[in-house]
Every structure is written in C-alpha cells, then in structure tokens.
Amino acid sequence: MLKIDAIHLREINMPLAHPFETSFGLTTARRILLIEIESDGLTAWGECVAGEHPYFSDEMIDTAWIITETELAPRLLDAELQGGGSCPGLFRQVRGHRMAKAALENAVWDLEAQLEQVPLARLLGGTRSVIACGVSIGIQPSVEQLMNKIATEIAAGYQRIKLKCKPGWDTQIFEVVRKRWPGITLSCDANSAYRMKDFDHLASWDQFKLLMIEQPLWYDDFYFHSMLQKRMRTPICLDESIRNRRDALAAIEMQSCRILNIKVGRVGGFSEAIAVHNAAAERGIPVWCGGMLETGIGRAHNIALSSLPNFSLPGDVSASGRYWSHDIIEPAVTVSNKGEIIVPDTAGMGYAVRRDRIETLTVRRRTLRAKSRVSA
Ligand code: OSB
Ligand code: MG
Image (tube, rainbow, N blue to C red; front, side, top):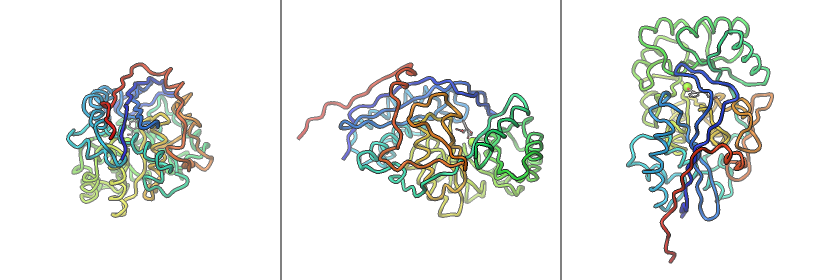
C-alpha cells in the first residue's frame, strides 16, 4: 500500500526556443503546471499538458490548477493506493478534466516505478529499447523558412515529417515539399481546421501519398470523419476526438480513422493510454505517441509510453533542444542520427529533475499535505 504525504503544484513559465503555430494559434512561451508528489521520502513528478488557452481541448492550465487543488489532490491524499492504476477509480466522480487527472496519475506511476526499482517503461508494459521519432513542424512565416526547417530535421535523422496545415497553408505547401522530397515519410495535422464543404479539397491530397491526415474535421467528431475516410485512400488519424478507450472503439468500428494518436494527457493518464493502446492493437490499428510541447518531465513519460509494442509509427517525441534552450531534466532528451531515442533502463523515469532550474522558472506554487495519520 502506498500513501501520498504531500502534493506540490507549481506553475513554471518557459519560453519556447522556436514559436509554434497551429491552425488554432501561435505559442511562444508555455505556462506549465508541474506536479510533485512525496511519499515516504521519495519524490515523483507529473506534467500537465493543458495549454495556455482552451483551444486544443476544453482544458487549460488554470482549470487544471483549480480542479487539481480542490478536487483531485485531496482525493489522492486521502487514499491508500496500489499504484498508478488506482487513480482512475479515485478520480471517477470528477467528470472530464483528463489532463489534470493525468498529471497526478502519471506522477503516481513514476513513484511506483521508483518503489519497485523498475524502469517506468517496463512498469507500463513497454518492450522496446529504442523508439522511432518524428517531428511536428508548425505553420511558418514563409515557404522558404518551412523548407529550411524540413531540411534541418531530415538531416538530423527524424523518420517522419508532420506539417501543421490550415486552409491557405496546405495543397501548395504539400506540392513544393513533395517536389523537393518525393520519398520522405510525410503527414499533416489540421487540428480540426476543415468542414464538410472542404471534402473534395481534402480528398485531392491522396496525390501526395501522405502517411496520414491528422484530425481534419471537428475536434469532437467521429461520424463525418468516417464519411471522409470512405472517400480517401490516405489514412485518417484521430487525435482530439479520442478521449478514452470507448472513443477508440467507436472510431475504429465506424472506420473514422485507420491510425490513432495517443496523448497520455488527452486520455486522462497512463491507465487509459494503455487501454487505448491495447484496444487498437487487438484490432490491428497502429498507434503513435503525440506531443504537447512538453518539458523533459512529460517527454520522459512519453518515451516510456512509446516503448509499448503497438507504438509502431514514429511519434511526435523529439529532442529537448527543439523546444527548450535548457530543459528541466538531465540529461536532455537527444535523438540519434537514425531518428531514435533510447528508452532509459534505470529505475523510475530515467532522467534526473533539475530542481534548481524549476525553482528559477516557478511563478506560483501551492502545497497540500495529508492529514496527519495515526500509525497503528
Ligand atoms: O495536435 O499534435 C497536436 C502541439 C500542441 C498542441 C497540439 C499538437 C501539437 C503538436 C506538437 O503537434 C507536438 C510536439 O512536438 O510536441
Ligand atoms: Mg494533433
């Protein structure tokens, strides 16, 4: 049995090394909620991937903070846990707020891995010793800058290039990129920027031999994606729409997609991420690990998750240096010239947390402690 003695919430502010633009907006700096839990002298971390605004999903850092402080953390402090797998049951009464739940649950898995003295990847059921990496390239100020970025990432060894797109930054872009690099593994992510009137336009992208088109339509849709998938050879991949295992089953059953993006924050924690992974594996649907511009803590957790067997396509898990001039873990995450990250084989998440840097970046904090327990 495991008990949590204290939960520390903190917000850190970190400027991105390069601004990141999607169809829903431009991000130049991240406000990130970090969770630190203490149990019997051990310390473990979780990162909340909720954004600065409720644009990717309905959560944002400020809603995650208040739900964690007022609802989730008190439940965790009151509980006796087996491990990370106990969290979904504990949090069930609270509807939604999956990114807030995931930050706490993932910290508990991290703690469990330290207690059991096993790598987090193994505790989750991971089997891979290296993971395949791709990059997500934001909408750029000019075509020239996009071409330079792609050239840099290909030279670095990344195995798949994903281009963020939106109306006006799509067909012409794919044309010039395919002309220069006919053979690279290329995909795109629209973050829900298209509607039914765009079906012919989207279907015309079959000519570009994309590995997949990620979330072209509404963020909460399965039905119209299945209509679109019927008209396209290119696989659709769902990201925003998939909140849990049942959503994955519905999307697969309806043929709304042929590939799934799993983000541990979007589905509410490692337990549900594993459940989505397994449901997809049993039905022959490949998955890959998405990214949310994480610091090293979230990145280390993504690496562990990506080591599960059905993560068979390159993920959006890339080197720390693409996001941060100084990451908050040590060593920073690096990618080999074959586009791979080595899965750590030491106990816990396999990276040390740079508490000194976190202190410097912290702009607010709050500590919640367990009521003093009477020992038997
Ligand atoms: O849709 O995958 C997405 C970043 C923020 C929000 C949503 C998404 C993304 C990315 C970047 O594509 C992935 C990464 O490099 O972390
Ligand atoms: Mg996406």
